[in-house]
Image 1 (spheres, helix red, strand yellow):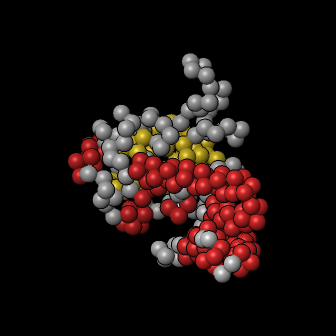
Image 2 (cartoon, helix red, strand yellow):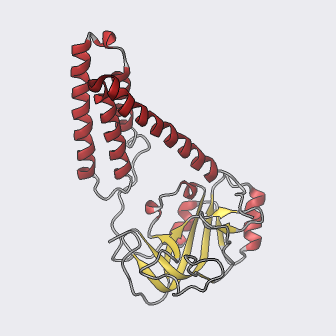
Image 3 (tube, rainbow, N blue to C red):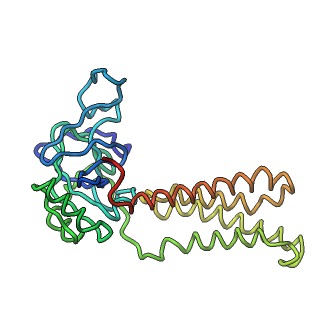
Length: 278
């Protein structure tokens, strides 16, 4: 089942979590839309139609991507904005639920957590604009008082890990990439350098495969495996001589630079308050 694909009939309201951008006036806007949510009930509508046209179906629809999106738990949220803004929203009406979250027809913000990064004056504007929303500065307290609704279709999310536990593998992979870039003379000659690159390639490939077996339910695994595969290709590029450098290392270097730039822009956007939405 896709993250939001399966249809889950339900009676009553379903609580789920999501993040927002905060506009200058204290408005709560989706990450990919400038249309602010209102205090109280909100109704989703399909926007996958030409300007001025009438939607052919109510939102959400199984054959479309429309509807209000939310996650089943805070561990499932995949956007960096949730490190500063997290909301518990009640959903009702037509609901399409999947393995990690849901899409819904109606939604109402029940509680909102704002990190210390959000300026106090902006938090005050949010409170004035959404008087029915319980505002928190303690994330754990909000989730304890407004817990998300568990659904049978949700897949278990991996337990929280220590801050350093997800970094050792990337540090090791980068060390192998740096070692592969060093002059052959520094490593004891061409033969030793080639042997080192070959061993590094196989270690990285084994690590990429094992990563999926060890944490199959971790949504971060696919990109981590892609990273390991990319570093593995980097280590074997010297076996192709000049062509290996031109057709493997240069493209990989370009992708790495673009990835870092995009990551930096996302982090900066997530920390920008107020957001440029109104």
